Length: 431
Image 1 (cartoon, helix red, strand yellow):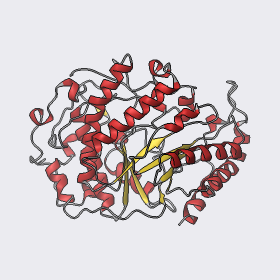
Image 2 (cartoon, one colour):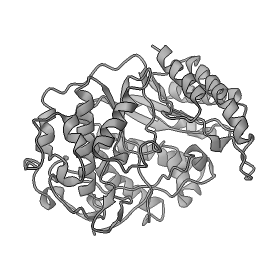
Image 3 (cartoon, one colour):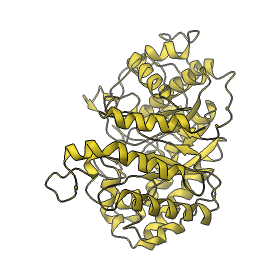
Image 4 (tube, one colour):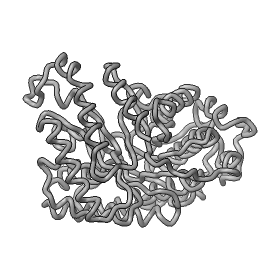
């Protein structure tokens, strides 16, 4: 086990941050990652835990065999999808030299007028436990939902999931070797979908961290400039290698980061904005030299309660900014959508953003159903009855925005078939 463990946040709570990340999502995660190009950990058995990155002194080139070494268990003359279906442990994952079997003719596809994809449903996904044929089926089902024209790939939901040395699931930060493993599996997923002519949107949502050594603003900024930056560079190099069309290097919506750590949440609004700008700029500076496709930033603010100073964050150096919409009981849904849209569009105009998207749209039962906490405003039955109409109002507001969004990202799974019907009809009707 190596070096320092660092964490971005803790489990979501009932703060603005927690509500934004509802459904029990845990943000947290930290990073060790190689600063060198992806390459070279193919064909190994027992993976260890720990973290890496520049602060740990790990040199991936010195620690692991070069990427030219092939995994004798992998036949890359087979299709990427066939090889992906056989992924069960690192011993079945191609080396980088074998990944290159699938990169010869890769090219970026022109972006559709409106990017339409469905979010990665983590319940259906088994909370990141799937391998092999389950991965193939999951991503194929997600990519072929009605009206969709973009395939989403989340590195965080790909194997490895379980540390066989420590005999426990991996917790963030993962080390450079584990990241390299994830990136090779991601490359296989991407190659399989590229072979079918699909546009790819790459993200890396981080899992829950189990400890932290970040104790103040200075140590947090050091983390951003070292482990975070190294991980993002490794991702960006893989994204360029696979000619991905869209890449979102932020592991969560930008403005939720300072709200997720107690010592950062205590900063003034102005200082939180300055930290957000620092993270945004450092991330872009790290990945832009390597990734030549569309670089996407993620943003979330609940404008009823957030200081308007957050509108001053400068996104002008990014190709696209995707904003979130999470209505709840605090406002009538029409009022909420009007305020969110107008505030986001003010950000778009102030930063002269060329492309903006509704990067995640969701209406959670937890935001409406009263469970004795005082936060809800409906019973479960009332919410089930109201849900299709809530969605229709939300989608109609986005479609009627005075500046049209270039991307739409609703959820992919519902127990209420009428709600799913509203979403699928909307996605199909948008050109």
